[in-house]
Length: 166
Image 1 (tube, rainbow, N blue to C red):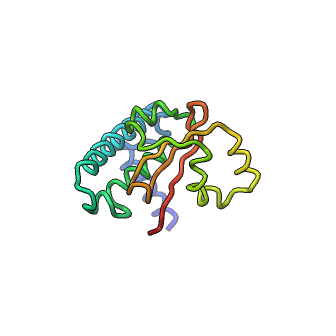
Image 2 (image 1 turned 135 degrees about the vertical axis):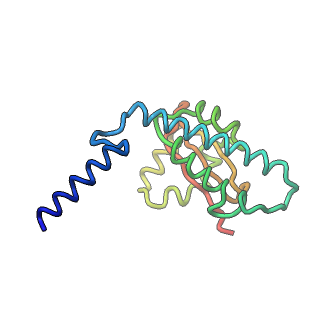
Image 3 (image 1 turned 120 degrees about the vertical axis):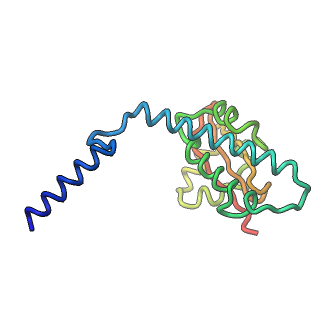
């Protein structure tokens, strides 16, 4: 049995090499290029979905735009994951996604941050209130459900979601 196992492992390794596989790690520069292409594709898709939303009559519902797990929801979530942290900048977010639906300061945004701060200590929340933060708001379903990017001095420091749960 030991001999069969060795043959199976060797055969798998040879098959992997013949199919273009290798034993080394992926090139980090190539990974960054792929991620950048992915963000550009996601951003293009977001801008198309946003334009489609804006052209619809008020009250019109489309699954791809309104449903949890729909195309707009999934695209915004992926963009938050990709762009919602350092080293990204406010400028890059706006270049990719277009102008935000709203920009709020800390005081105006406080009513939306309950869930964001839920698992953080009170001292962390108070410290954040002392910073000059701007929140770039991108609507999923208007003011009911939205993605926000938190920026300080032009740098993205985090992102989050606010849901009305209505």
